[in-house]
Length: 310
Ligand code: ADP
Ligand code: MG
Image 1 (cartoon, rainbow, N blue to C red):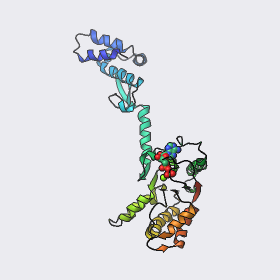
Image 2 (cartoon, rainbow, N blue to C red):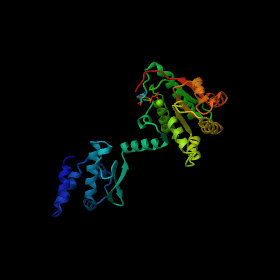
Image 3 (cartoon, helix red, strand yellow):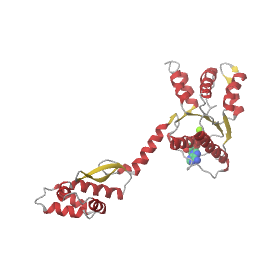
Image 4 (tube, rainbow, N blue to C red):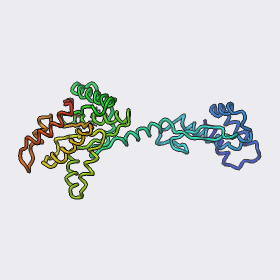
C-alpha cells in the first residue's frame, strides 16, 4: 500500500489541472477493495469518483492499517477501532464505519466486567477463567468439577441450584476459581454476580452504623443474583455481625432462592466453632448452629487442595 503515502502528499498540494487527480484515481483503482466496489457500482459517474477522492484515499489507508493491525491500543484509524466500508450514497461514493473484531471483543469484555462486582478483591482474580485453571493438579480436580457443575445447574435453574462451600488452605486458588465461575456466568448468560472479601466487608458494615448506611450496604449483598462470600471465617465475629448481619442476609437470600457461594479456610464444623465464639458474649452454640444450618443446607462442601500459588 506504499503508493498511498505519496498520493496523500500530492493531495495536500494544490491540484493544478485535472491530470493529477486522474492519476491518483487510477492508482487508487489498483487497490483490490476499491476495484471491487468500482466494479459493483458501474453507475457512479467519473466526476463523483474524482470529487470523493479523499474518501477513497482514507478507505485505502485505513484498510492498509487494518491489514497490518498494530493492536487496538495503537489503531491509527480516524475512528479508533473502526473500519471503513464503501457505499453508494445516491450516486456518489461514501464511507460508513463499523467496529472491528478487536473493538467488538473489547466491548464484550467490558460489558462482561460490568456484570462482575467486587468489594476488596484484587482485580487480577476477577480475570480468572476456566481455561486458565490448572486441570492437572490432583488436589484441585474435585473443586474444578464442582465449580463446573454449579455453573451448569445455575444455567439450568438458578432458583433450585445449591451453592458451593469451597474450603482449603490459603493460596490454593479458591478465590480464583470463584472468579472463573463469575466470568463464565457473565459470558454465557449475562448473569451479574458480586464477590465480597468478608472480613473487610464486615468491618465496613460496623462503621456504617455511624452514618446509618448499614441497610443500604447490606441490601446490595441481599439482592445480587449470585453472591460470593470470600474467606468467611477470617472476620472478627461479634453477635451483631452473626445474628443481625449474616443471619438476616442469609435469611433473605434463602427466601428469595438466591444462591450464595463461600470460600473459607475452615470446614463446616470449624466455621460453626468460629461463629460460636465472640469476645463480647462468650460461647453461643445454639446461635452458631442456627446460622450454620443455613450454610450447610444450601451448599455443597468441596475441599480444595494443591500447592500454595502465592
Ligand atoms: P485462595 O483464595 O485459595 O487463598 P487465590 O485464589 O487467591 O487463593 O490464589 C492465590 C494466587 O494464585 C492468586 O494470585 C491467583 O491469581 C493465583 N492463582 C490461583 N489459581 C490459579 C490458576 N488456576 N491459574 C493461575 N493463577 C492462579
Ligand atoms: Mg482467597
